[in-house]
Image (cartoon, rainbow, N blue to C red; front, side, top):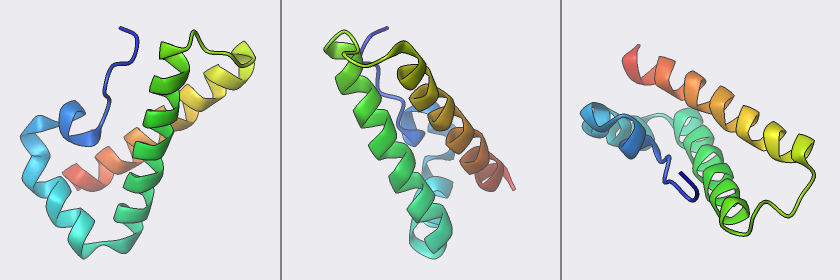
Length: 78
């Protein structure tokens, strides 16, 4: 779905408290979470504008978001 919010708390609602805890206690997690959320916001804006960039660049943004999401998830469950 276009413009869908992929924020960490939407993606992992069962870990809302853990995400909040990590954001406060772990500066590396907080920094990467901020990068993830900024990237997600950029992707949503592009989706709503019919992605006015090269397909390969758009796919790279989505790939980068997925990699950050996986890394953050490992910290959340760890």
